[in-house]
Length: 268
Ligand SMILES: NC(=O)c1ccc[n+]([C@@H]2O[C@H](COP(=O)([O-])OP(=O)(O)OC[C@H]3O[C@@H](n4cnc5c(N)ncnc54)[C@H](OP(=O)(O)O)[C@@H]3O)[C@@H](O)[C@H]2O)c1
Image (cartoon, rainbow, N blue to C red; front, side, top):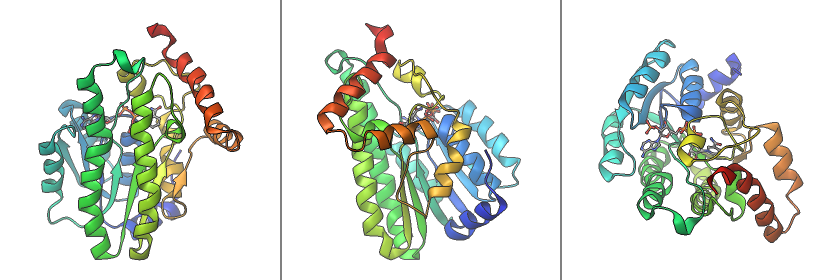
């Protein structure tokens, strides 16, 4: 999928010359970075794996934009500082809080170290970067912030209990910020995809069915920015969300137990 020339021009005119995409070395972040670069927006891209990030820079630079790779682990305070330092003096207009990962299986059997690491990347880094850049956006009376939520954000999800909790944090944070920042012309979007075929499942030790290619969800996310505060990219995910809208939360948890149970069955 590609953005129309009109959409590309809208993104550049609304969010300006520079965007930051965390976790842009693969999957959804890389696809969003591609679409933004194709819109003529310069990028700061981040990830931990230097080789993949440099490869991404090479691909993105073909769109005749400047690309600054920041190799940084967002589980560490120093990693967040590296992104802030790289942005100094640049007119950043868009922050894409995309870096994240999941875990799965029984929470009691999980490594607490990994779970805390996930909390830092999925929530604490998002909190810090959003606090820093939202101040700039408020001052310049222009900006956009995209948060990567998930379909798991809307109820508890057995076998991905803590990952789902990190995404519930993101969803709630984004929904409220959208209202607080609207008077300052700052657009906030929570994007809640269902399964996406990226590096995510391997790292989370899940086997996901019916997953969409990242190329199917980048465009719907960027088209939604500035038009709505929530987007569920992908037809199947939309159908799932809307058909579950009136189902009581306790029943949704049971349904998600079945779904996530299927994704993690190989572990038991
Ligand atoms: N895939 C799905 O089914 C799905 C569904 C809903 C929401 N999401 C969310 O979408 C976002 C992107 O995931 P994805 O599916 O594109 O997975 P992915 O292909 O594994 O990409 C994750 C990205 O985050 C980066 N990252 C991970 N840990 C990091 C850390 N500690 N510091 C800095 N960067 C880090 C990775 O880069 P390095 O490996 O180089 O560090 C990579 O660029 C995540 O927030 C995820 O929770 C995914």
